[in-house]
Image 1 (cartoon, one colour):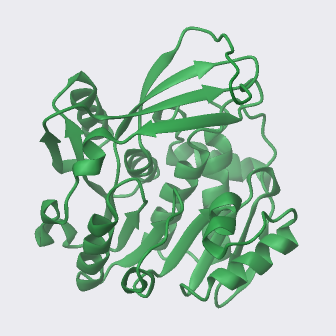
Image 2 (image 1 turned 45 degrees about the vertical axis):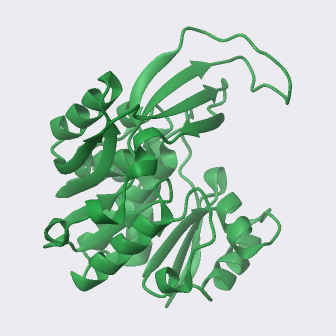
Length: 300
């Protein structure tokens, strides 16, 4: 069982000819709405890749909230502990350019009201992996970590958006997953320009946790733990990078739950992330297990 504690957002996506500069207005096409939120995206990614998934989070008492919960249930995710709260659901406002690069701003909505008391101990039973992000209150993250540890789960933290966390949280995390921007923020360092610089940064972050995976977009990913190395990115034609990181995170959680070695796990996660960039939207772009296996079979 993979337990995901995190955010559920409705994504409002607008495609533009180019991303605006500060103070600039650009015109775009008709906007689209897609279920999203880092927590929900990662839950759907893991479910489509064959994981048994349980989601804990909050939605608003609005149309967005009903759609968000229904979309998770349709994917086979256990939504028993996705609760309604008065007010709006979370929403993300996403601009995407023709190369697939994006700019995102998030209104937390109901996600900001997910409290430690919303996490019952029973929801963590049978958990092999606890998957967390940082779009919910930090005290709730800390409670989830404590409950996951008590249940014997492996703790996978996708520290996005990057924030300072108490040592009590860091000491319980088994694996930290970050991109290059988040890694630089956590380490108070410059952005890595090469995989070699990224690997040095991952080694520095191991002062916080036993294992670090640092994703680099088109340059692939590096990892540092008992072993370390660089896994190059798969070459694909990117359409929209919005949920690539969430596809990678969900796939990594499935790989850990299945006991894959890290290099094999990263190959699996990298393929899922690459495939997600080839389709528009967040959850609509997340690949199924059969697609990932077919893709990997074709790459040799």
